[in-house]
Amino acid sequence: MNRVAPFLTVRRLCGLLGVAVVLGCMGGTGTDTENGLGINVNARVMDSEGRPLSGVEIIVHSADFRPDADPRENLFVDTGALRTNFLGVSNLAFLDTGHYVVEGRWVGMSVFFDTISVKLTDNKSLRVFTPHAPSPVSGKVQLLSGFRIDTGLVFLRGTGRLSTIHKDGSYDFGLLPPDAFSLAIGVRFTARPRDTSYVLVGSDSCLDTLPVRTSGTVGDTTTPSDSIMANAARLACGTQTGGIIIVQTADSSGPLLGSTPRDYIIPDTIHIDINGGVTTISAPASLPAICVPTAGDRLSWENYLLSATGELRVNDVSSTLPGCSAP
Image 1 (cartoon, rainbow, N blue to C red):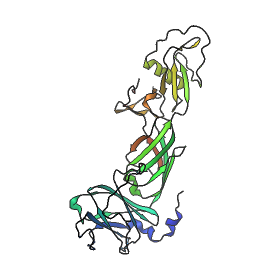
Image 2: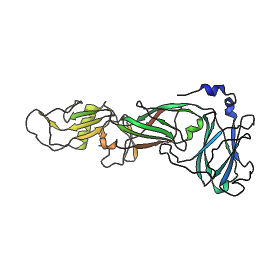
Image 3: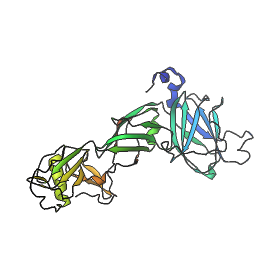
Image 4: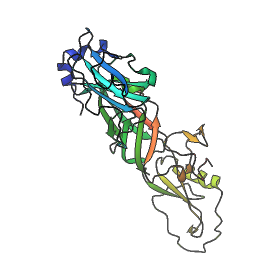
């Protein structure tokens, strides 16, 4: 649940648009900096009037950190909590070089994110960040296959922020500063088809159940080509997006039981990744069901959050699995 009221009652937080976080050399204190241990950077937080801001929690993760995997990170010489003192200063003594995401939290809310690169020559270097007041960030995840998400997580890479994906596809990060929009977002999920339909080749009916053969011989069990089967699925069930369509050959007495049925899907979108490139398919199209695997966890990446409240469109249609191509 988003809680905006506490933010409105904190007078000093209202001036965050002018806050600057300066990472630089604030002088040694007889600790690891003077002893030559680690790559030391001091964080000083000041409000818009240049006054030190104490009690700001500094949280750092490697840029490729994933909160859904819960790895144990050891980034600093001192493993204690990082929080600014009455001078607005907190020392960061990195164990190694690398790319990191720095987060600042004040009165329980994230007030800035930024990605920094730390090199050996960056000891006592100066970094400047500009925090902003946080706002609610929520939305929905839509799988381009049209499949339904059973379970899933949305998370910001390089941070500890994640949200459960609910049954309707919605997620809620709570309050985040605008800096979060520059971070990669990950979507981890398991999914399944919305339903199953059946089509008999030569019929234009999209059926809920496979008819039982009434009489007569089995007939010719030769399976038609992929294009014929896929076209039958498209013509009969073109509006049944997000489901599995089982296509079976038949004669006047019903399904030919000796033939091999084939499974197809009708994706929700006409823009799907096929054979390594974006293909625009005149709607609606049918694809082999193998193109959308459902077993195990699936992981997809988006470049960034497009809006504070919006839809994450995840392409879960694979182009690398054997047998997955547009008929």
